[in-house]
Image: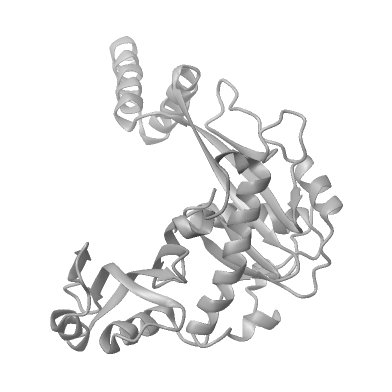
Length: 313
């Protein structure tokens, strides 16, 4: 269900109300793009049922699903259409279109082409832990995460979040773990990492399927290259790639998670219970490994744009 995560803390001032979340999401359901619409986005029932709930609660853990659709219109195709229109004007009037007219031709060409364009859909799982006050989005794109967070902030009265903040930066912690070869309690270092220099050269060294307990890695760190990604395994249950921006990527639940389960135990409820059950234990351990939370854990210092929902006109 989840293979990457951007994690937020929900402000303590928000009163969690599943019915209010359901009502808010139902106001912005997903609908496919219209003939001349470039992009559409909204909420869909996470179970995949046509008339299902938009906010599902499994064992007290809330699951939402965001969907977007965009028309694929290659720039080369659009430019060719614009040029055809410009050439037609030049042939009939003997003049070349100016800058403003070319922009109008581009808008016109786009409307002509959009009904014939292919569409691309993308979904995103959203997990809300109302008790622990975590919001986790299954995406590696901060832009896409911002879009979803904005929808939630706009739709839910009092809802406010901030990106998870820790006392020790992920980059500093990863550098220490690699240099000392002492991973935090409960974690092991795997065989993938990326090191980047902070100077003008911006040089990058990548290791894949390679032992990292070698002098070469320590030398790179001593020379000023700092980790931007590091593969870890938590408690022999989850493998992940931690980034310097505190994102989690390549999230994989290992076989030990499924020990004792029959093959027919799957399904939406089981998938949610397993994923959220494991992640709700992983996140506190990861936070502890990074020195505990920063002041945003108490709801302080939230970005102004996220402190209160925007006023509706």
